[in-house]
Amino acid sequence: MFIKTPDDTQIMTIERHFLEEQQIYPEATGVLTSLLYDIALAGKVIASQTTRGGLAEILGQSGNTNVQGEQVMKLDELADRMVSRLNDHTGRLAVMASEEQEGIIPISPRYPTGKYVLLYDPLDGSSNIDYNVSIGTIFAIYRRKSEDGPGTLDDCLQKGRDLVASGYLIYGASTMLVYTSGMGVHGFTLDPSVGEFLLTHPNIRMPEKPKYYSVNQGYEKFWSEGVRRFTHYLQGDEPDADGQYRKGLSLRYIGSMVADFHRNLLGGGVFYYPVDNKDPRYTQGKLRITYEGAPLAFITEQAGGSSSNGKQNLLDIQPTSLHQRTPLYIGNRDLVEKAEEFIRLYDR
Ligand code: P6P
Image (cartoon, rainbow, N blue to C red; front, top):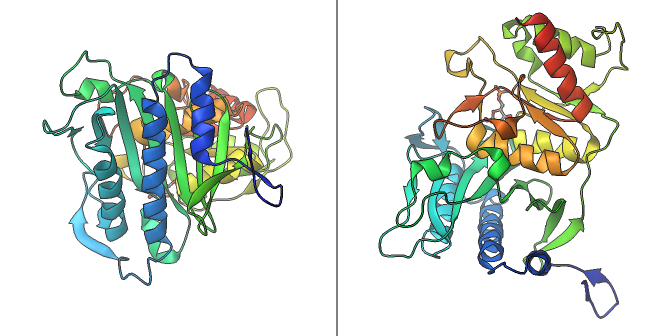
């Protein structure tokens, strides 16, 4: 139900949207609604810092490195702290895990534990911070599997199929929050003048007709034959198994996955980060299944798209470690299936 403003404009705030979705589930207790709201709040605070980066002298390296061996930017640390501190005492979570922290983030015994598990990438694409490129926060929410007491690593290692909700914030020309709780994908834009996320993209559906492909083609020589041929198929100069060519797509690659993903979700296309033999760290791909691949795969599937690691749907992967990497193909369903076809044909 929209709120009418004095000049009769209809607006829907994110809080009201969460509450209306909650009413669809009679057994809902409101805990998930409150957790989603806490994430939106963390996003507002992070947005206030990312848009002031240059002014607040919080750009640049923090001097620390994270579990990935990557230089941690000050904004990374702030974002990580913001999400964990806003959620570590609310009694809604049994355990958390972050891209920035090696192990699970337990809930202090000073606070009650709850029934949900939160995994998040606090600031994906942060290597672009100094270049004023859009970056994002990705989150994944599961129900705990353990009965009670402190949450466990096992609670954090669930298949994407078991996601209760997932989404991302994108800090760009505007700040948006895009999420799904299994009832479609909805996008909200932050109105900084009132500090509210307002519903601007209800029921997002990925366009049937793709426009873009997004991959770092600079690494082409490190790819397998199947991935190279798939890429040339997307460019319109390689036939598929039936000898069919397609009209070439436009290459759009920002190097910030949330931004690349968001453009394809709204504009239509496929994003992929294949195995590349350039870097020994990435022989299983660069992106992580738990707090990057699976949450975005849930969004994609809810918006009519699909995802794969080249062989199976990302949502069916059972992670065995928190920071497990995966090859990732995500977006337009037909194109993801084509990627699997080329890999099946040429990468035995
Ligand atoms: P490359 C950013 O560092 C990130 O994790 C993703 O956001 C992005 O899609 C990818 O790495 C870019 O990697 O190797 O193309 O610079």
